[in-house]
Image (cartoon, rainbow, N blue to C red):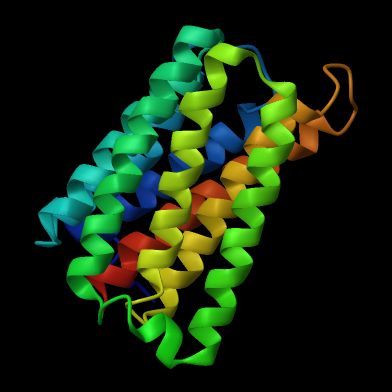
Length: 223
């Protein structure tokens, strides 16, 4: 059963399937050396979600956040510190836009204290961010400390803001996003270069990240 009206050949459903196929292709190549084809698969996966959001009349901020995420994917599909910083900057902007989007569709930050379940998740998110920042601060070079600290704050703000919506798809997507970013930071900075765990971690990072963007997109388009 397709999530949007029409069959598998309807534009919206076909676009979603195109995105899923590209995501699966990238998953199977995530442990390989960077190539243009591999970068294209990674970029197209979320770019098609941006196209889908635009086609379905989704919020402009959602389209912008997904488009910036796709640009970040293009950067992170390549090796090197410059590519990493390019990806970090793109995703930083995407998180800021997500914060604005969630707050616009939420009930205000006051609900975090009014409902215990939201407050509990918010506390868990804050603890996660503090632990990650403390671990990374000791392991990264001085030039990366401030950019990473700013990014961690943006991730936390995104997580806090989504809790104002009460939308399970959006909240689940944001939690998966935070998990993916945390695992990415662990794989890149905290795990030994020759660790045998890197292969499964890269696959898990991608699975969590794509599932996050997928959930956030459908959370808006199907609600």
